[in-house]
Image 1 (cartoon, rainbow, N blue to C red):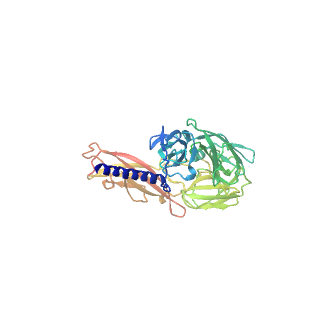
Image 2 (image 1 turned 30 degrees about the horizontal axis):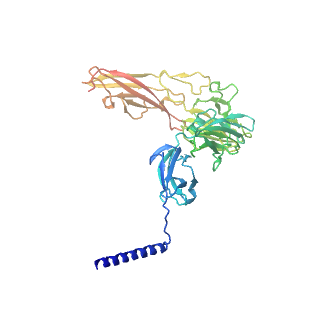
Image 3 (image 1 turned 45 degrees about the horizontal axis):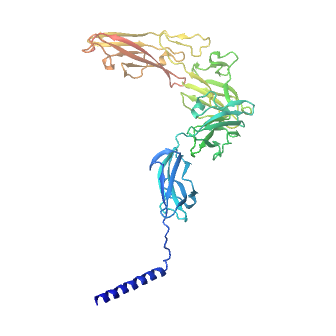
Length: 501
């Protein structure tokens, strides 16, 4: 009974096994089931993550397929941490390549390199290998000018050498060319990086909205300048890393020369010491630059000038101004070459005139004449010519003394210092005394009695032998209209060796 039961059990097991084998052999595979395993990609001899490398770098990669073989690779290089677009993947069967990466931001830029292996059934690695690093351009490209000059409409050749605006303004006469000149520039470039090379040149003038050129053939340019003012020409080189040279390869120049202006001498033999700079007083008396005119009544002064424009027609328009002690009205336009004025005040005057050319450009260095009106007072031993007709100066002989007297334990310093004046009577002069920095009031007399209240110093505990005193004496004259005129001063020192109570 046990044996039969065992035989039956064995039969049932055998039938079940056959049924299971039959059912397994007849089962249909489920849709989408993939037996092919994807390959794996690895990178070798690549920069460490987030490291810095030269922009020209060789990268290596490889792949393994667990159930087939790798037949090629897709790679992509993107800036920063961007994800590669489908169009950026490149197919290759190689396992290494030298890349010349962009490094223009301005000298280094981050890149991410991706690579994915593809097996013999066309299946790509779903997790591409990648590495992030910075590409660095150690040397920006450079350029140098091989020629830089302009030819003016008059046929003059002018070298253009100012690399900065400061060099332009410091140079004499500076890189200035006429309107209508043709400026010529040529250049060459190089890249000091190992294996690096220039890929093109960009150039423009300050009048251009954008750069021109861009190829290696762009190594020269000529332009006719038609607009006056400050102009510059700039060249930049690009290298195989996409980097640009520093924007310091510039030539600055000025278009349209300033017109020139000069003062006409008051006579053929006048003012030789001032190179002919002068003017006329009262229509017939020649005066020179720096002269002082006597002001006993209103004075008539007149000026004459001329000028020319190197790169334009004859000058027909001028501007002028008369400064009074450094200030005054703005330039006024005049079409004549002479101008006059009546003056009745005491001042320093500067007459200035400049030519204006056909492009409305004014002479940057106006012609000028300086003169003074009203001779200032002067003290003993000093001389004044001040418009003297025979040229012989006058010498002041007015006394200038001080006397120290102690009366009833009070110390007095009697100062007398009269001034001379070639125009103002002595009784119209006024004086002011400043003793040891203590200033007094204006008075009509050239005499002052100084005491300790005005700051007089003598012997004391700190100065047992006495002290020096300084008195500043000022004299002021009058203009013809009775108003205050010019002021002069002299200084005197004296020693007091008595005690000031």
